[in-house]
Amino acid sequence: MKTNIMPLKGAIQHYHWGGYEYIPNLLHIDNQNNQPFAELWMGAHPSAPSIVKEHGTETPLDAWISQAPETILGTSVAQEFQNRLPFLFKVLDVSKMLSIQAHPTKKQAEEGFQRENKEGIPLNAPHRNYKDDNHKPEIMVALTDFWLLHGFKSMEAMQVAIRAVPEFYPLQSIVNQSNIYELYEYIMKMPQVEVDAMLKPLQQRLNAENPDKNTPNYWAKRAFEDFPPQDGHFDRGIFSIYFFNLVHLQPGEGIFQGAGIPHAYLEGVNVELMSNSDNVFRGGLTNKHVDVPELLKSLVFEPVNPQILSGAVISDTESVYRTPAPDFELRKIEVDQQHSHHCQQAAAPEILIVLEGEVLVNEVHRFKKGDIFFVPAGIGYTIQTEEASILFKASVP
Image (tube, one colour):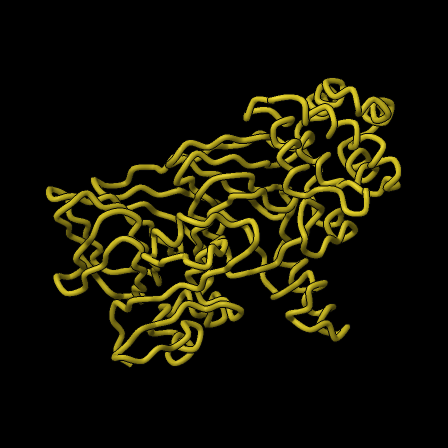
């Protein structure tokens, strides 16, 4: 099989929390039906693979790779990752906040996937936790101002947060004699009547206030609007807004989220790169399946000091966002009339997306804003442009 640079068509996910403009504008799509465009998937995950466009035919990327995995992925990647593309690349437009969530380790994923298979739970069942047998560490880089929750605060910071919210007064005795696990387990298993008794007056107070965007109160108020009470009962995921670190990223800044780190995206557009997985445990602020026991089993109950990543410049045209993940590596490529980008030989498979401008690859392939292309391992290329252009590239370290 002869390999070459191949145009790709990504898979669009219309989740309810998505925005209505960024991804349609990126892909030059007229969103006449006013659908939410939440995620653009670029990869070979079997539930929504990208499409390879070759000689007028269209083939799912996972099926295309399976024809010659060692040729397309390179021998080392094919052997290490069982002939599968090890990463999943995305663009996300977060208009409404995403669920309180975390992802499993590789071992948890393998055991959980096998267990749910034995239980006969269909892969597309809404109550299924494990969609595959892979872990899902992930890195995101902001394309606009981006707000998220990331990891537990320290116990001291949680005590301060609880004291600052008068409606949380009943929690003060618990927080003063608990560790992070005991406090969070208490909150997540607390009788609903107690949840409602605290959150109803909090909602009433915040409705009359105009809190600052860089405070938990702002996002709690938004959560009450996005997830109104069901049958008079409030979503306990709102407590997590006060217990997790609130992080505000500027465009170009990123953050890495390993297995078990609780998080939630709140607002903004990003590129996201992760292991080739769709395994998520949710703990609230969602209309999808919530599984508190599975979430509690998977979380890292240690305080997190968010580490903001800036791309490390490695050439005139390229910067890299390094993480400990063996499955993926995210790079940003910036080219202009004076600076072309050269790759002598791709050491591993790559997926690139043009986010700004228009580029010419190997003087043959012209890609405009929103275009995606796949570079098999072993292929060299040059990216040229007549205007300032920005691409993001997913590959393997």
